[in-house]
Image (cartoon, rainbow, N blue to C red; front, side, top):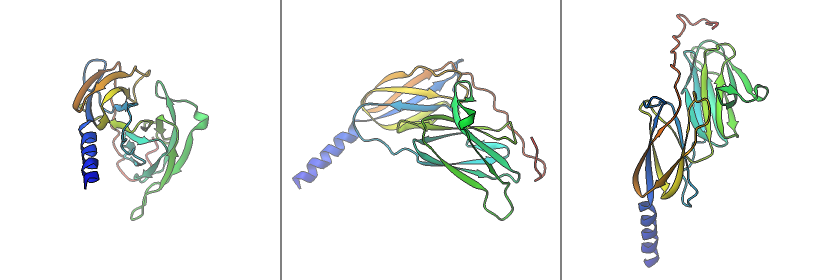
Length: 226
């Protein structure tokens, strides 16, 4: 019984030392930056949350949905074509400025258009290199999407308000990194000192987000040829 109470006290102490961090990401003009990937690094020992190891990206209405997906290292990402016309998936490591690092190393495959009453064409890939991947389609040049493979278990995609809540971080020194599809260069990390309980930090970047053009679906189910 004594050992049980000691274990319970140790667990309670560990829980009390956990820190939560709200990160607000701003663009160059000081406005909330949507679709920013927030990553927190900590070398303090302690439990780590399990990263996301499976994700789905759909091709629908000439878009990749979600536009940005965050997964852990060696995660499996599945791609599904929900449109009634064919799509390609071009998948490759992305460098600064939104271009492929080496187009010759890209993975490419075609997904047939969906037929009524049948499951959509799909394929999956394991992503083993950390950092951003760019998604594109040979047939429809307007289609762009991104997958970010995180090398830290604390990684999350921000919403339109630019905010992210990361939980169960250890107390102590940490750093916050930001990645965004429209960044031209990698920004410097922001150092933070986390205390038990709630913490908050605002990160102002030099990023100017591109205006996202919503492409309307074709009027009929035929191949749009865009």
